[in-house]
Amino acid sequence: MVSGKTTYFLRGGVKRWVLIKKVYSPPNKNFVIMTEKDAMKNVLVLCTGNSCRSQMAHGYLEYYQKDLANVYSAGIETHGLNPGAVAIMKEDGIDISHHTSNHVDEYEGIEWHHIITVCDHAKENCPFIPAKNAQRLHHNFSDPSKVTGTEEEIHEAFLKTRNEIKEFCETFVKEELVNG
Image (cartoon, rainbow, N blue to C red; front, side, top):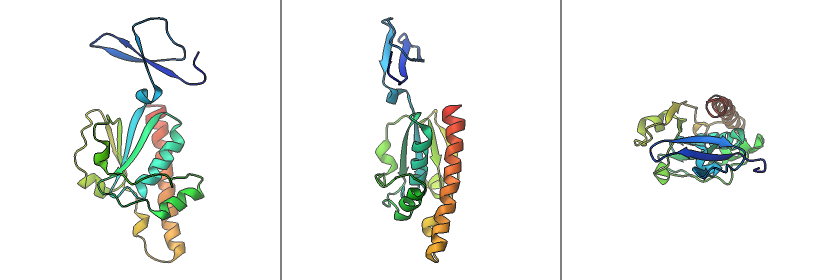
């Protein structure tokens, strides 16, 4: 018995493999044991600079998905981590301060199951990401880092965007990862 973790196995021949979820090690020799990381879906969150909206989405997806997927975020450029995004996420108990701003090219070769663009600019300008079986989703969230005004107005913009991203991510996890 595997202690509290699901173990995944592949069964089949050279031409046909079927993923089977088991909670014990099978005695049958034609099973190949996979790690949980190998069996999990890969989700890419994509934005222009991978500094704010994609980072917030990355944080919430990791929080809500409870080991159902490997979550990555990237940009078509890298702008560094936005301090306002880090602060607004911290207010909701999510620490993204350890995240890095990554370029989409850094993840070349990963087989994506879901590619989520969180701004129109990234959707329109992103280079083609080969992922023949990926579900491509788009939701344009407003960019709070572009808002000018008082501290209160800027905070409100970050809060509004964060809450919209939070709701989107919770729904995505329920519909696509848990029930999908």
